[in-house]
Structures are given as structure tokens and as C-alpha cells.
Image (cartoon, rainbow, N blue to C red; front, side, top):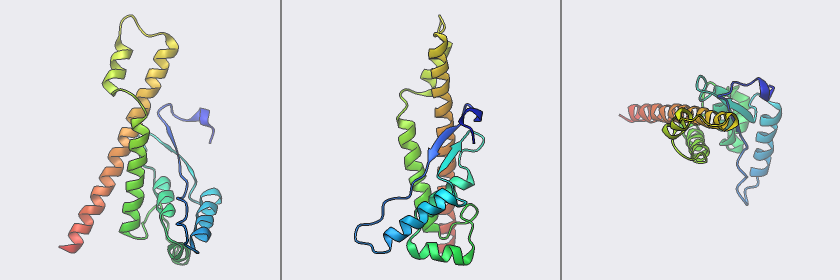
Length: 169
């Protein structure tokens, strides 16, 4: 995918598996398997979020993969589970979505000011110089995408919580 062909509202999101737990003999093997699956397999490491696709299934699948244990990776292959469509467990799904929400919040916090502040800057008279206005518009679009992604991730977490509550009732 050519970066120049992306919608201006796209936010790039890169996924890396967490480092293995120190002292875990299966951790290094699992980390290697995850890295291979992200680099060469179905679950890519680079994703692009947009307002129309704030939480793409392939991103969720990649994050689910990152939080699988070594034994889960083996059963994933044996069962033929597609992590884009189905979580291996609600705990795995919850970990992946919590991590996504945390990372999205960090990305969003990196942008100063509010969307209203950016809109006011763009509406100011006299108008901003062309390049500055373009930067402010880009920042505003990034904030919109990140906010949409945070809402989608929070809604998915809420759905998991509701399903777990219904199962225990």
C-alpha cells in the first residue's frame, strides 16, 4: 500500500508483539512465532485507521495474536481460528482491546489542544498561512480518526463485558 494513496484521514498504527516474559522458556519461541505471523502471515504489523474503518478486523486480529500464549498459538493453527473474526477467548479479546484503547489514548494525547481549538484556528481571520492551515487540518483529521477508533474499541469492550455478564447471570 502506497502511503501517498491513503485517505488524508488515515492514521498509521504499527503492531509489535510484547517482549517475552523473562525466565519463560516458551516465551522466546512464541515471540518468534508471533513476529513471523505478523511479518509474513495474515496478520500484518502495519494498519491504517480511518473514520470509516476506525477499528479494522485485521488490526484486532493482529492484537489478539500479540496477546496469545505459546500454547494458544499452537491451538490457533490446529483449530484454524481466524483471529480477525473470532477471539480465542474473551480474556484474549479483552487484553487486545484494552491495549488498543491504551495506545490510541497515548496517540491522541500527543496532539495538543482540542478539536474545537483546531476548528477555531482554521476559522480565524485573517486566515492562517497555507502550510500552517494544512498542518492544522491534518492534525484535526488525525484527532477525528483516533476519537472514532477509541469509541469503536470502547464499544467492543462494552460488548464483551455485556456478554460476560449475561453468561454469568
